[in-house]
Image (cartoon, rainbow, N blue to C red; front, side, top):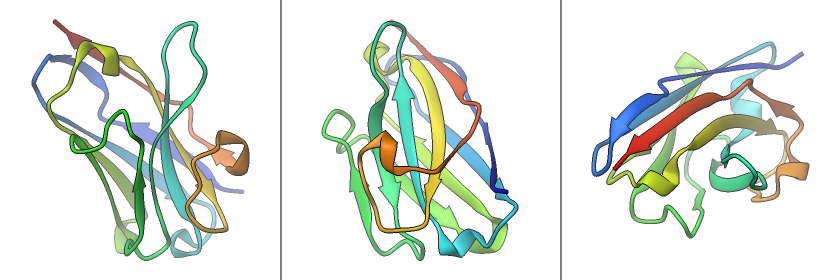
Length: 123
């Protein structure tokens, strides 16, 4: 059974940076595409970024393109989300997710989810 644990959330000022981490366990990490999603109160879950098994293919959501990057370290079983130039509208719970096939932006295509970590951007 895959387990995902996010960390790195918190309060940050607008214009600042933050890095989220997601620790993967239970299966072979390098067999999985990893994704980041976010959900603000009253809104649907939104795609943020995804990365394929070896990191040579990434897909970034339009709302964060040019500000966020996704990376992974297979030896550490960890995927990262580097968030720069943060805006108040980036405030949300950020979720890590895993799937066996290639990168995808739909939450329904991911099989495993973490509990989420809150990111709050103050203006």
